[in-house]
Image (cartoon, rainbow, N blue to C red; front, side, top):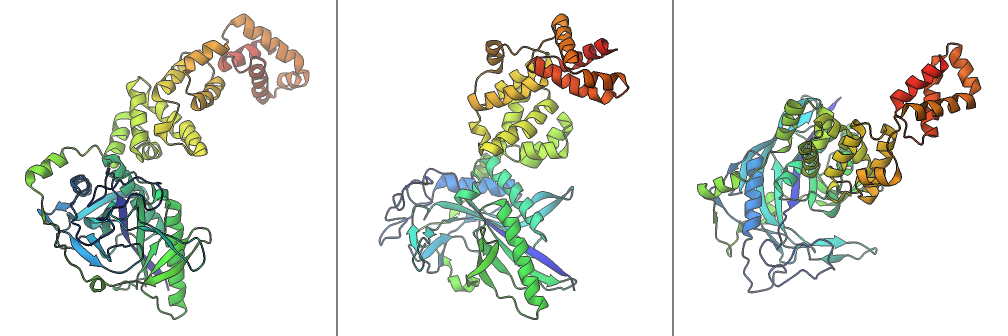
Length: 478
């Protein structure tokens, strides 16, 4: 019997604001534990929360970009539960379908070359919890710096539109791109500013009913999302095949061990005893405010990808890499604005630059090799000032130093040798040094020419014009 997985996605995105959701405490990542706290975010008696307007605007803009309907009134509720990372004993959130900021939207993703919509049930605003650390067996420590930080929750619709780990990952990749383009979240999963909690169930093929779901936590990378979902699907299928029953629960993911483990029984909505937050008045979202925010939404990833294909003739793989991150897209467009042919710029960015960025774990915003450097290097190559080999060596040097390619070429004498006499002298030297190879060439084995060209390039320290080098070698040999 075959089984069909169904995956609902709950994504929490920490919003890019200077202060927390209901107080003036900073939201900086990495500060000393429990230093960015105050009586409001710790829930001391007598304090009153004040909503962060910028956080509300971030969520409205995200909901608009996700094609949601925007509620005219947004209300906050208290979500009551006890957990060590929740100092107040309740979380200020929004309650299900009752007055969230955005409802009934969708996000298009690309699956097997086709675009499909993933329905979004709601987009709402809440405050984050603290963070637990488990350094010693039987003991836990809590850092409340994150408690009260503004958090946006994006929940896909039911029944789920996602039925594989790869599709779930693609949804998350595309959602992260949208949020970073909007500037509402930095998307750093490793820092916890973008957290994904998939709800996973499996059911027999043809079944009209979905299976019992489990929620999976601690997924801090796209790789972990795929591995975690695949493991959980296999675990549930095995339970059903053996005649058991899947328990509705929250499970954690161990990236090191590549397995999921039970954390707690999954609560039902009524367990949280939601009721309206008495200290915060409803927020009126007027048409005028809505249109002001709509005007700030930039060109989004898939729109940009379509434009790159149509305007520049780029392929699907290139456009995917270039548009996955707003800063990579900006880098590419700056190169084009400097006069670099789009396909040439795309090749250097998606191959050479991406490889160096990945190797050094460098954000493209912090790359020493700026668009002006790349434009300069490409111009030197296209004008024949430097060879392709020198261009790649120069690329690496500029990436490390941030120096201008033209200045390095002049200072180190890297100008390509196109002088006929100099190339011919080097060619004769190579021929004299490799009599066996020359004999093979003259016997009809023309494939050895690449070896001789390589030797000539070595003789000239990579400065010879490769095309002219091959021509001169043939002239000398024939």
